[in-house]
Image 1: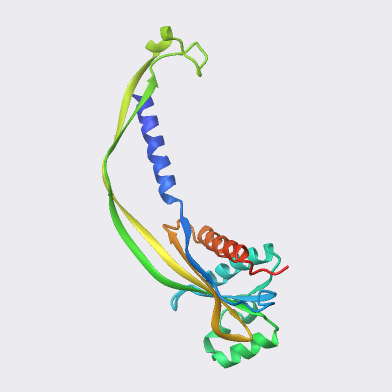
Image 2: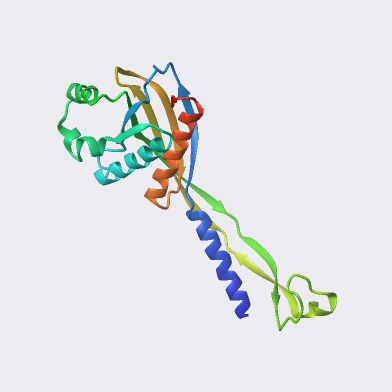
Length: 220
């Protein structure tokens, strides 16, 4: 019976690990008429909510900046350029002027759109497996018929349960700094059950930057 408990615990741990893995998907992406040089020197803003931790905004921007730099883009975090609180008291005209003075060609904004929670019922399952009941003297990868008495079949039943899934929807917009009124690129991502904020940031950054690259936004 000790073997049965061991396998049961192993199955439960595996299920928990699988449930904890976050998943980010690119829901939609659009590219308009992108002026030449838009992505030559970019500044990244993460506007993920009024009550968000400012350090989270900084780390989110850094994750995107790292992916952009890996693709040859001269990118900077707004958190590092303007500081943690400078933008709170800065009007949009002053901000636009400083962005131009620092010769940024493109501004990438990441904003939080929505949070969706859904409950689903996972029905009970029964798993059948063979459990050794005694010493095995043969190659464990091949047991002839006369050693089969060392094995018997056991069952593990997992009871049904309710599972809550949380999905976060974010939107990324790219603006040309000479004409910031209209976005030239828009992407929407969905991240489900993020178990770690750092990992979620990297997943979102990877999905968006990859799509920007695939759409030819990074000029050589």
